[in-house]
Structures are given as C-alpha cells and as structure tokens.
Image (cartoon, rainbow, N blue to C red; front, side, top):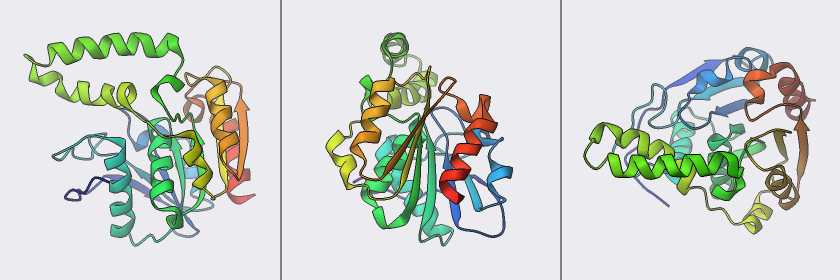
Length: 231
C-alpha cells in the first residue's frame, strides 16, 4: 500500500439527495468524460465525477504515479467529502482503480460498476496493446533527453505496466457488481467475461459498441446502469 501526502482532487458534483455515486474516468481523460451521465444520474444520487491525480484539473503531486496510489487518493477524497460509503462506477483505468479500491476498502463500496476494466495488461486486445507498447518504448527512450515527455510516459505506463490483479482476488469483492463492455471493446471479451465469472455477485452486460459506450451510446449505457443501481 502506497502512503503519501493527500492532494486535493478536482471534481464535478451534481444532485443534492440520494446515495453517493462516484464516477472514475479512464486514462488521460477527466470527469468530463461522463458528460452524458452526470445529469441523468443526479436524478437518483449525489454524483461526484472525480479527476484522477495528474488528469484533468487535478494536480500530479510528487511520488509514484500508479493505480494503487489512485485508489488511496479515492479513499482520501471520500474522507474529505465525508462519504463513508458510495456506489462506484469506473471506466477503463477508472474501473481498474475501482477494483483495487473495492479490494482494499470493501466496506466503503455498496455497488460497483466496471466498464471496460481489465485485470492484466494482456486483457487489452493485441491490435491495441502492441502499437501502444511500441510507442511506450519509444517514449521511454526519448524522455531521457526530452523531460517534457515524462508525463506522457507516465500516462502510457499505466496501460502498459498495469494492472496486475489476480483473478482469484475478485472473489473477495462481495458488492453487487455490474460488468459492462462493448462487443467491439478494446478489452478482450473473454477477459471481460472472466472478470464477471470471478465475481461472486455480478451481472454481465455486453452492449453493441466499442470501448467508449458511455460517451458514444449514452442512452443504452445509462439505461443498464440505472436499472442496476436504482432499479
């Protein structure tokens, strides 16, 4: 577990009543990714769309730049907002953060939505992961003499080097969980299905579309999530 000085994460809040819902975006994005979810979900919950450390308007801070540290940031954020427990919806890297958080703080998660999450780097389709890996290798070399590339190296590193979550650990997550992905997702469908199978209390939904369902197919995505969280 990585301990460090907490930072103040930027967030968008909507909704005055209801159980808290925290939205966690993907790699190199911000809470704005959920622009089609914030208002609809705020009819049912107090919604917090959080910018992860080093993303959007949240500061990078010092020290490690890892998914594990982001999970600790989420715990600190909930403490700062006086949120003892919440529903957590994570997309892509946000889903991976949500998994790590639920494993570390199971009592703080009521329901979990994992959209396009993966447990290992190889959960990403080869057609995506191979070009990313090659680009990451170039960035690592180039950043040695071009410091301005270091933030990009760190961001890509989250996808190339992480996560590493044993499938068997998913059995520890008891919260009801919706596992949702597109049928042309950049996460292997077999990998998504294995995540759902490993969870003891999960629902699997594969929708027509790619990795970015919440942005490109918001009506279908919102309908499924709304039925799961508040149906």
